[in-house]
Image: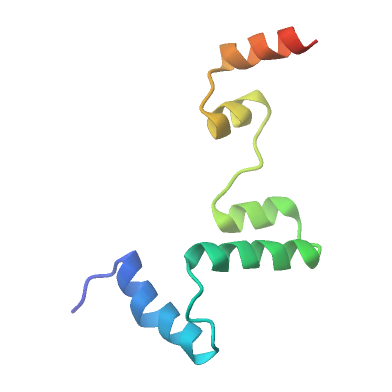
Length: 83
């Protein structure tokens, strides 16, 4: 039995399906971005789209810190300088 890995699944399942519909040149990032664009055009809740893609919309300063890698204190200093 072949182990389940991301590359193995991509090669065996996704790539063959994409080849059948003429999209063999698409990679995983293209598929994700296309999914995101289509969901936004259909008016799907942005939080749901972010959850499906494994992203977060952030939760205040902690969300910004997580997304940017900045510390909360450096964000606070930047906000004070900007105001």
